[in-house]
View 1: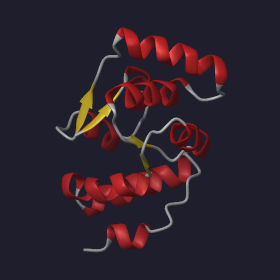
View 2: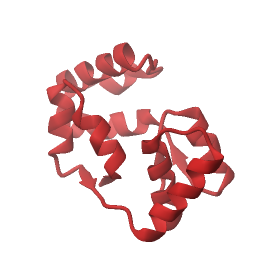
View 3: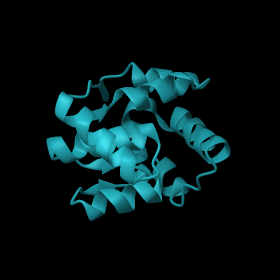
Length: 130
């Protein structure tokens, strides 16, 4: 399962994409609360780095829970790796989502990501292959 902290849940709930809402409601996603230790670490990270609230919470959770960070944000990736957090990129998650969403919905999601987030999914054809 993919765990996501409150700031990321909040951002995703603003999405107009029904696909995003179905992912949030799926068993693939665990919406987690931050512990006090994670909240304190997030505050310290926020003072040092210019990351968004979602990235800050994700890094804090991954550091305290010894988890892997999933991101396509290079600042977050570089910072996480600099403090010993393992990182995988968005494409790995997209491969896994194929089983949950199916190829058609995943294709729509990838198009949304590329259009709205201005992120190029390099291996899109391979991900969407049957």
